[in-house]
Length: 113
Length: 108
Image 1: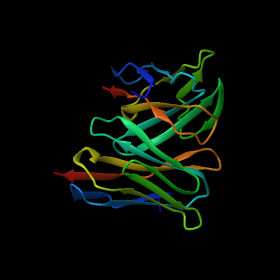
Image 2: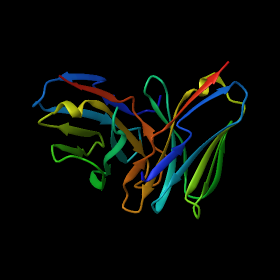
Image 3: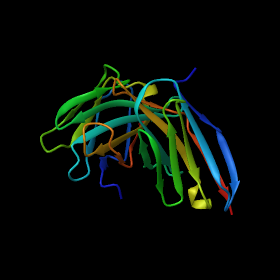
């Protein structure tokens, strides 16, 4: 058990809809990372938050947004969903702002119909 | 050319064999990560390296910054080591770039 909790585990929705994925980091960790893993593109880094502030941004689409709350949990919001957004979304946490080992959640599997 | 490449793409070994997975990258990096993804999809971080060598149990990871190359070694391989091993680098812009992964099957 990594100590990182992601909810929900599975999500099925339709094109055009909006969903929110939630991540609770390991106790004491200040950084949260979001990743997308699709069959055709592999793992991609989306965004990192450190202690409530955006720290680094990767290949995150404008339709996607994230935030980290004062209690350090994070939410990834995906809107105007397209078929290509179907993927596994992983959250990871680490103690520091950069170059620390990361602890991964079990992922949320998003299926767009 | 992908920024992070791994070899081999697929690897089948017999239990007990010594295994090496290679990772080459083309960008300047602040750190390199080795990840293990189990058949069920879960990801475990094995190592984070910025120089030298690290060892954890039967796993050893090395990095050569000048040659932009890292290796992951598994000694005395076991069927439970069967997984996809992924190399990821963090560039100076704080972005993570992932390799395509190496699928390892260890046969009993």
